[in-house]
Length: 109
Length: 109
DNA sequence: TTTATATGCAATCATTTGGTTGCGCAACAG
DNA sequence: CTGTTGCGCAACCAAATGATTGCATATAAA
Image 1 (spheres, rainbow over the protein chains, first blue to last red):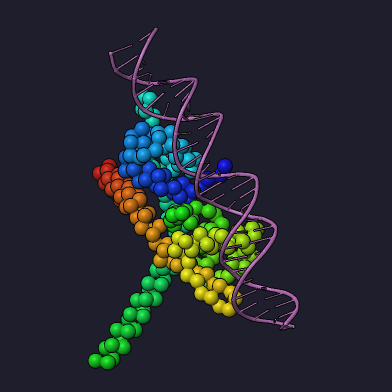
Image 2: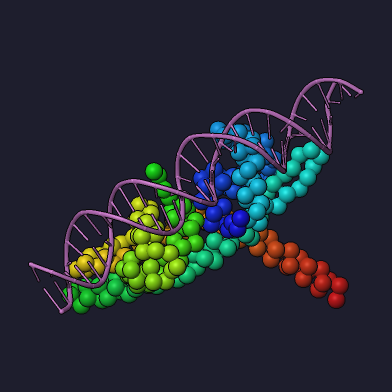
């Protein structure tokens, strides 16, 4: 089973988990309190996130604290980079257009 | 069936399609040439991308040219924003740490 | 008109997914 | 020691997913 980070963020519950553990480490039980589904369902999501290398974990007694491995999220950002370039180009083209319109307007006056 | 953009980019084939139609509009057949799967499979992916509002389409005779609705990709970027803030904070903290170390070093000298 | 091409839509199928329940085990609390 | 709590793992299940084949339709070419 090969999973990647795009699979990881495909599920809404998983995205919510990611947001929750982005700031602070949390235990599976604490996470489960935030959702309607069972603890085991959350546990499965955690497992998937872990497979994707998205988690740091720290054991404290019988509790396990999971936290988001933030730098992994940058992979998504890197993939987006190619499109960001495109839409920034588009914006600068729009800027040029606006500049031209502005220019024409000043000629009218 | 409610699908969002995160579902859309979950599939590798769909991501590849997105990249292909980001720059130029393409027909389903032209797209299918780039993959091992059948034309109908690609057609289904197109359908899904369309449901997610990711596509602009233009009919030209019997051909349909699909292109990426680039601005829709910014939704992903917007979601990432919250994490970007976090990792930028982390970087600036690292910068502070480096500054402190540098400071200490200069005191040594 | 006849034929070929480009596409969409429906039915079908194997696999994956997200969920559940039940169980076992380690770590605290009594 | 005994009971309770926090977790992970396995089995199971309904629904969604990605793919295929087959068919219908519209446009272009012969």
